[in-house]
Amino acid sequence: MEPGDPAAVEQLFDAVAPSYDRLNDLLSLGLHRHWKRRLLSMLRPKPGEHWLDLCCGTGDLALLLARAVRPGGSVIGVDSAAAPLRCAEQRSRQESWLPLTFRKADALQTGLPDASADGVVMAYGLRNLADPARGLAEIRRVLRPGGRAGILDFNRLDPEVPAARFQRLYLRRIVVPVASAAGLQEQYAYLEKSLQRFPCGQQQEDLARSAGFKEATHHTISADQMGILMLQG
Ligand SMILES: C[S@@+](CC[C@H](N)C(=O)[O-])C[C@H]1O[C@@H](n2cnc3c(N)ncnc32)[C@H](O)[C@@H]1O
Image (cartoon, rainbow, N blue to C red; front, side, top):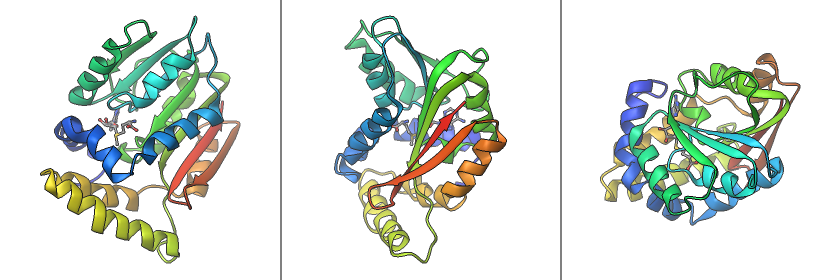
């Protein structure tokens, strides 16, 4: 499949949803939880704040945020695919006191009001959007002036540097074979393709400034394998 085709991306994540959490833990050796916590420690969500988790998938970040903004705050998880949202809703029912709701919508056009969020997160979502620049513009639109946003994803590296060779090896020799065993070879081969069209850190900063963010700084973590774009509206 070709990255950036919204219908194909929706189909892919619907197919992957039942195995997503298990594969994520296995393929990252549980590190994705550490990267998500790191994102939130940089953003510092506070009680009483209103946050969005765009491309929320099965709800990892939405759940962490909802615990952090109590009392008085709220979190909306948004995803375009129904199956991951069902998993997220099921997980949130186990903590029914959390101020957390979910909405099926495109991250490029959430339908949420202007300047309504104190903060926005997006993990492993921007790379999947048909137009990452439009995704950043939508985040800017829903964020209140002075609000903060953080985007976690793979770091797009210069193909010649050693860290990029490691990344390719990891994606081809570990991710695809492990996913194949779960019958999801094509879905996980998509990961490398989507990374090839993903803007690098500097380009992400430039796109964010063009979208109207006052501050945009890209940080790399985990030996440059992952990136966090920190934004201020
Ligand atoms: C790799 S998963 C990441 C899920 C979650 N954020 C996490 O880190 O575990 C990407 C998610 O983005 C969603 N997605 C892709 N394109 C989207 C779009 N245009 N609008 C909303 N969600 C989208 C997919 O359905 C999928 O659940």
